[in-house]
Image 1 (cartoon, rainbow, N blue to C red):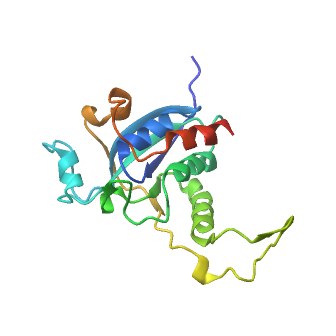
Image 2: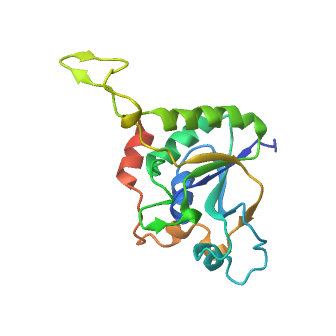
Length: 195
């Protein structure tokens, strides 16, 4: 059997259970794993790492590790999907999940991904309101748009230092609990994926 080349990227923004469910839907995804990004202290063997991070006792970001086949899914497509379900303009969380442990971000391990991530984040940070539309004409470089029209972007692209997997009870949680209320607009996501 021929080995498949895969890459890892780590995403955060809101509840990591929901992010895992989103990325499991995509073609070219080899695996996903919920866990803790860049914890300030070791979580291995911690009695309840989830509670320690959720309470802020141990500073870390809750996120999902996505292992993907770059021949079937590229990084920009993964970023597009992330920012369809996560609003990069909201500080520290999405929906009811609030706090620094839920902030939006992309965490990379391959230095070759950094330029693409920085460009994407620059795009997110610098897009303002939509350009003005008038009867059949699109006004480019709208003179009325300016710094006052931009919204702060809180999402970040940061090099991964450490990732610790969450316990088994936090893996594939939405799939095992389909009645779970989520902040994700699944219909909007499905429409996006059909496009």
